[in-house]
Length: 108
Image (cartoon, rainbow, N blue to C red; front, side, top):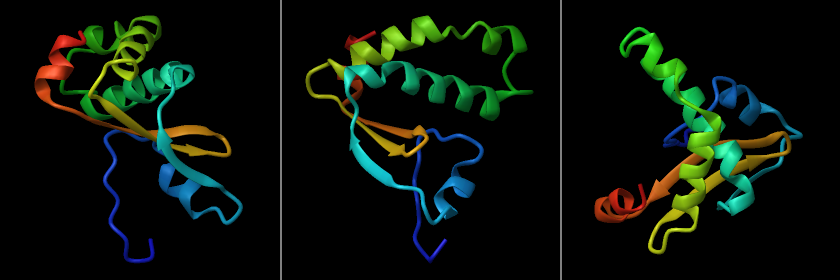
């Protein structure tokens, strides 16, 4: 992809295909509370893709969209934490969270 290196914390399987589309508008922006459900979906999907066959199926299948949406909402509203997301014309596709470990642990 044009010699650039990309770092993504979590992304859907088809992100590379989406990024190659000429008519796809991409924007990098700070996450808003209204993005919490999309971020939870990306997070859960990335865990399912990454840890299938490594972590127990029961653990992965127990990941709740409702629970993780609430978790992302707390993180978005947490002072000192920055959550950046890649948004496309078809919706949120990637997320990166920045902040200290202490802040992340205190928001749980």
